[in-house]
Length: 402
Ligand code: EPU
Image (cartoon, rainbow, N blue to C red; front, side, top):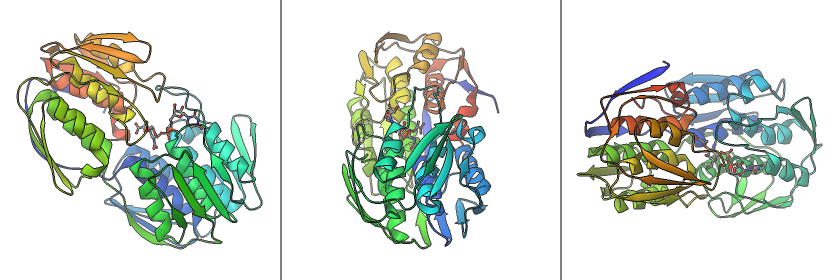
């Protein structure tokens, strides 16, 4: 499907079961590279990125069996430790195979990801950490060629907080000789979920969820069964949509604990939000109030929720400042929202959004996954029909948003 047609102006009502988290499932699937035993992963979302990862692992010789949310991966041997440009260019999370391949095979050839619609996205921190663990990494013809006899533990202070960087190094360190200390590590819940899976496989990891993770390397890891955590960004997207369009929605199978910053902002906008351990109910009547957000690493406000909150701000009472601090080019949706009549002024990494009563339907173009989600929400609060073009981006991260 290439285009999504939305008739705006209706309040949202109903119940949705949240899927497993894409950004937890992707590294967890890669963890199968670390063991010769089968890894069973459940609550895996049915997404294009998951299919891409399964294909990538398959090319390396991992047997991948998929059925309804369950994936069994088995890699008795790795036949080719290569991640080709063809796959890496479609999904930069492919770089997550680098650490596990190097730890298991002593070598890896992984394409450099290059730039993308939301920014430069370099991998220098992944490289710096692996080099500190004794790897040699050379870039030739667009590929990182990495080798190491056996990685050895090291103290690694990361220059900035990187989610997949932390995950890559944590997986590599699990099989390294001796202790690795990751300082300034990412605290995202997806890092914690991966650590839980690795621990179930026999890894010795302490401190995941804090900025200091200690990993005691082991000789080999075993098999395990792991259930992927609920997707906090999918959850947040439905919540933001309800806050913008009005209505009452109940989300089940969710993890409210991982959504503190988002829930605070929704309440500030005037939504009534109540939670249990695994459900969230949101009710919104009337126009939302303007809320400013500033993206930050977890537990701060997620950059993956920024576009959805910009959509909310376009119809809010008052002026909101939306500041993006993680990616330098993540405002493409702002220009598209302007086409719907939104009053947005870009000042460097801040978008100044003056809420208007309603947007007007038009055709807009999606540029990346979360921008698509933001544009869909904008379409819900626009009069008449909105068509979101290049909506295929959405299939990378939402099972069936429509
Ligand atoms: N960075 C570097 N050097 C590195 C690594 C990162 O300079 O070696 C910079 C990036 O350019 C960026 C910042 O550090 O400015 C943070 O990037 P990070 O590495 O944390 O991002 P990521 O791991 O590539 C994951 C998610 C993204 C999410 C970001 C930030 C996965 C598979 N992806 O990306 O999710 O936006 O963390 O939270 O976990 C999405 O789902 O739509 C998505 C883009």
